[in-house]
Length: 186
Image (cartoon, rainbow, N blue to C red; front, side, top):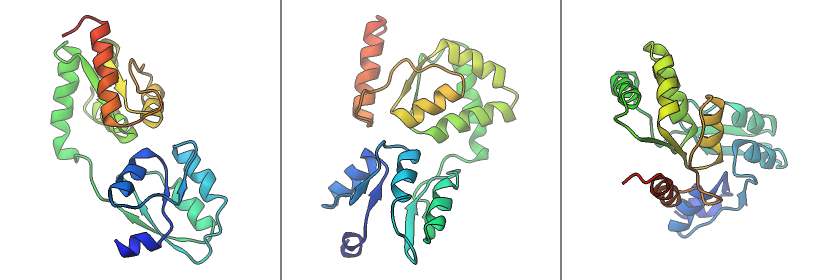
C-alpha cells in the first residue's frame, strides 16, 4: 500500500478510481473521456522516459497503449488480474446463443468490450454467427457504458439500455429494471 501510494496512478475511468478510493487512495490523472482513446491522449502528454509502467490489462487487450507508452520512453509491465472463460467453456456460450434464439432468454447485458468480442468469436467458430445475429434481434440488449456500447454497435447490434453518465453495475441494473418495467415484463 505504501508503494502504491508513492507512484503516479493514471486511470481510464470510474471503476479504477472507485477501487483506489476503497484503498484510501485516488488517481493522480484521469483520462477524459473515460475510454482507451482518452487514456492514449493523456499518456501522449507525459514524459515517461526511463519510467517503468505497470498496466492492468485484460486478455486480448490491443497493444495501442503499450505502443504509446513505449513511444514515450517507458518500459511496460502488463498485469492480468483476471481472465475470461477459455475455449473449453465455449459450449456454454453456444448453449446461451441457442437459448436466446429460442426465446428462452429475454435480455443480455454487456459489462466489457471483450464479452461482445468473445460472444461473436465463439459463434463464428461454432457456425452459429447467423443464429447469434437473429438472437440479438430478439433479445433486449443492455450495456454498462460507452466502451461496451461501442463494441455492441460495432458488432451490428443495438443497445436498448445503458446508464447515462454513471458506468457501474448498480446504475446498469436500475436502467435494466426501468427498461423491463416499461415493456410490462415482470
